[in-house]
Image (cartoon, rainbow, N blue to C red; front, side, top):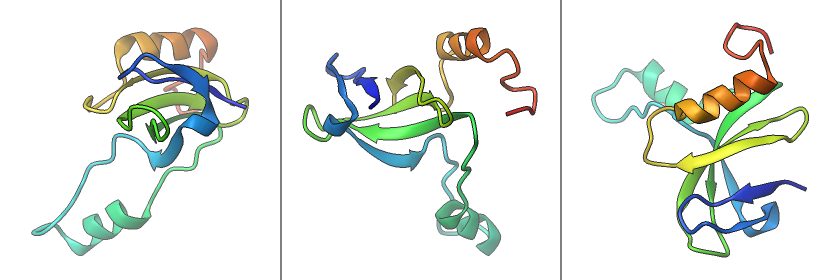
Length: 108
């Protein structure tokens, strides 16, 4: 069971209070984009073995969206942060690099 912290209301609870909604930091394509870009936005998602950035919603709490950085192999949660960010905060990236020295080097 994951223990997740909502950065919006400050509650830390089991994952059953939240709901995962897929990959975070997607570049959205809409009207005027190429068919390939739009198809990629709609259907293509990363499914990594290792560090993954996901969108979550505090379903049974404040109802707000946020992002979680976690490992899909160990279920370790590295941190959570605002959904309004376009990339993971530096402090979360540093936590990941401390625990996974190969993060960002192309290795899983």
